[in-house]
Image 1 (cartoon, rainbow, N blue to C red):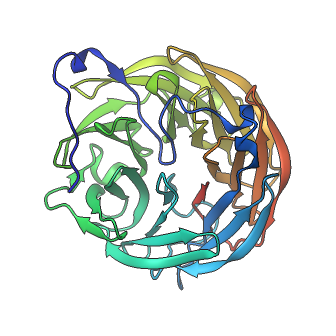
Image 2: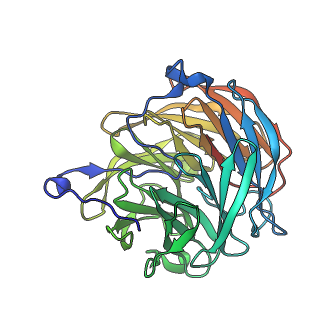
Length: 384
């Protein structure tokens, strides 16, 4: 059973930020600045999200960032929708920190798949009911997994991750969203220390927080109003800062991002930097390097990736509105950064491709050769 040690005294004096689905602990070194890390190989995974049968396309990653297709492996469930961005979420595909397990939502069959990951591909551990309808986003902290169910009356529901990869639903863990049926939620994620969960609501411009108890159950939600319109994906930067993408938060409805700190124990968000625009359109997904210095947004309507720098106090500054370009009509949506923070991969939903970039020590992006052949409606990407 999931148990967390709570340190008494002084805890309420600190401010903590929020982790994205793929974010790792602050203070880790970035691979692009570490010579011995640059030779690491890994894997990249993309979810097909097909209504006739969901699957995971697995790629081996070479030291230079290039990808080699391994195969497609069934999740045992059903995908949902078709066309560009059918799930409208971030975090639909998630790797455990050690890379042993891959978690996928099956929004068409209302369940979650757990797959064991290896160099030769994936092996299905099992499928497990999500505790709601249309699961679209996942969050993991140690052995505690939460799923965001976006359909019907949206909720979050918690599970214990067992050593063999199976999931046990936590009785009484389902909690509603502040916006109810109007929420149109985008992502669920843990704070770096696992003490809070956060959910972004596109439909209501709200950001919900939930206090996570030692039992793994969540109290809440506490409703916070987003600085900009259409809060979507989030990641955490330096000083445990929550950075939220805003699809319509900039001037003239262009994209933006805001940074926040979360106060203990109330769960209220304190704005650090409000709505820094990137002049691009429809920034919905956000990822951060391991050291939290750089955050990237994918602008699906512009075919670009924007880069931001996060200051030591959580201050947010636009580095380059078009740090990476995937091209006209590519519709970049989900993104993933490798464990060593050396490579960034973007899922181009418009062209059924994966764009690859080398992350420089200054946060710049250099385009590399990616992969193609993804089906229409593919969504969710994870990398290691």
